[in-house]
Image (cartoon, rainbow, N blue to C red; front, side):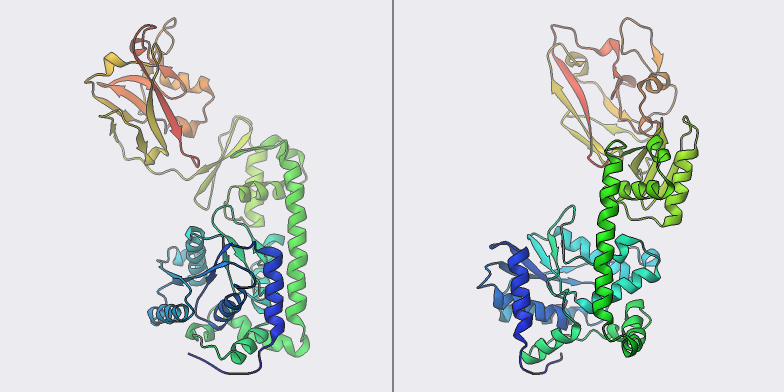
Length: 451
């Protein structure tokens, strides 16, 4: 633990108080993202002092990444710090996935923000400051990021789900925060990995930025201003994309003809916007260009399949469909339906239920004691949904329904004693339809929201 003393710069407290007044409603449940480092300890100290004059329900959340051998000791130090201040603390111990693909820093960040999303509060207060902002801008620049990436970190963000993210220290330098810690005689944790220049951020912090400061002492302010300019540019690009999307975008669908009418730059912007609106990780400029080429140049009857970040982008009848990567279904898989209660099928991303409707749906009498089960298409199935027409192949019926091909192969087909009796979107076999004056059970297939 480190500690020191010096007169407290009240301007930091006043600045955060003004920020809270502008952005945080009284009574909000605010959890400080507490790593135990000097930045988050100072933020906790500031918000503790301000909680009386600006009433908030203050708590803290600590993420134990289990990377350092000292991780448990850090969690203990955070618990002790919060206990002394009578501040509730929630400790999340997480597992890191995708380290090989993302790298350790990115995997830790992804897992950390996933934990924030699940936390029960109105906002998470993070201790990022102006030095962090400048470092993030440079890292994104070196990665070839676009305007949204170069916008770096917003002071206030409302994710699609989970609590808001607050960064009340973003307009302050690291030196101001450390001065506050010394003046208040605060104790904090020193993470040994922060000195390891193998990590890109640490390399910039310890090797590049000190050299930059010898020629450009105001680098923090100017780079932060650049990030703000990029944020405005990104906002304008989103506004343009929203205008283009008005007559081109439906839920999970994008009109390929409309894409073809736009300039390449504007079409890439619309495709990027379409993906971001569905929380799909960003694609590089080259990847977006390749996607556009295949979506626009393909024949109208071509069935294009593009994969990106656990999603599929498919073209069908002039539309680009965004589809989650499907779960493989074992060959011969059957789901038995014994009690006729709602049946959830995670592999098919939906739930099947029966609704009592006299004179409609399946003949209830025929289902009594029958072996009901479901499976997907295997080929050769037939159905007679229209009693005035002959039995037909399920393949032809599905083709006429205009159901996209990838959905046809994942429909739950209902069988009774090995006879196909119902297909979602197609109908009930004539022999199994309830008579007008008899009890009926209407099957309903309810796809999940992300199906």
